[in-house]
Length: 241
Image (tube, rainbow, N blue to C red; front, side):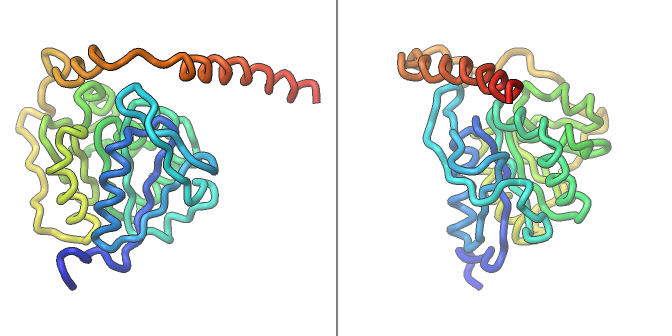
């Protein structure tokens, strides 16, 4: 089999919700497809979920299956993109937590980056594991029982993690390796002293990007306000019915 089609016959679930970081879903998804894998976007609802670029709305991605209808046994691996909204929604879903647990309990490969490991923490899967993530959630993962390392990618058995989109060039080939069942990439060696220390300050490029990003449009603010007003209205209608 050619290197370019090394994932032919493999089926991967990409678990994501509204607020996923666009580059962290779309780029790995495309790389997996180019390698021959069939990728299903699995989410909490039907339709098209909204991506973001940091905090700004981005394009939508179509959902192939709702998590309640998706069977982990149908897949060979799991991709968990980040973004700070997406994993926060997923970790609150019992069905999403169960879906993720099933992959780990079956020792199937899981690749995640940025804030994605939040979902692993809420699923109770981090005790004794070694991983990395967006530095801002280091303490959450350590408190969940993990050893946290400040590295581009960390491989611990069936779990592959990366810090964020800044490490995409390292994350993509490592993701293809783990989903192909490759053992060429060595397991990450944990520091003798345990977790790497907290950062002294936020990541500079993220601060700059937020500082110079344009303000939300009037249409975007109106949409947020309309959604906020519609939610209590739906609850009142439901109570009356």
